[in-house]
Length: 111
Length: 110
Image 1: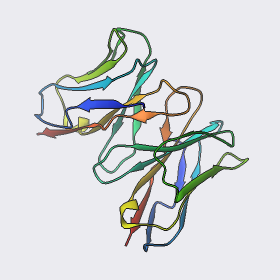
Image 2: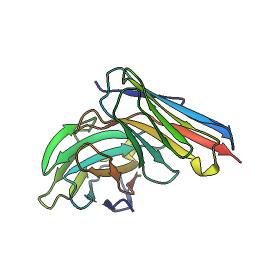
Image 3: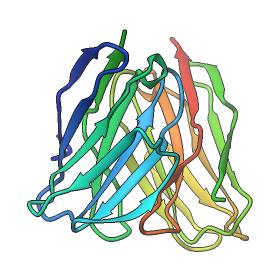
Image 4: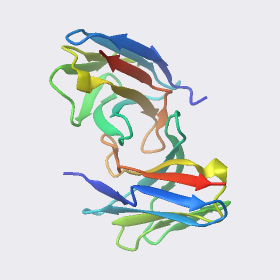
């Protein structure tokens, strides 16, 4: 158990819809990272927050947005969903420049 | 921009054979990390390398950071079926943006 909690574990929705993925980092970790992993693909960096502030952006689509709340949990919002958005979305947290602790991921299926 | 490459993409080995995956960057890295993702699982941290030429061992796993800090390798001696998974290197140079290589998927034939 990494200590990072992601919900929901699985999500099936239709094209054009909007979903929200939630992540609770490990206790004491101020940084939250979001990654997208498509089938048999690597980990694509989406966005990173530190103590409520956006610090880095990767290849995140304009249809996607995220935020980190005062209690440090984070949400990734995906809108106008397309078939190609089907993927595993991972959240990770860290303290400093140490290891990333990953959650178990949220598997999104867009039909 | 930041880019980390890994080879090979896939590797199939007979149980007991050795395995090596290589990670290369076009820029100098200050830190590099290695992660393992089992099938159906999430990435799990293995190790972090910081110093030029650093070599670290974890049982049958040997990690190396190149002298120029632009490449790294992970070597597994005498693979076991428990080694199956995808091994990723990650550029930890930036605090904020952690970029992963595409990974090497290891299959072990019993």
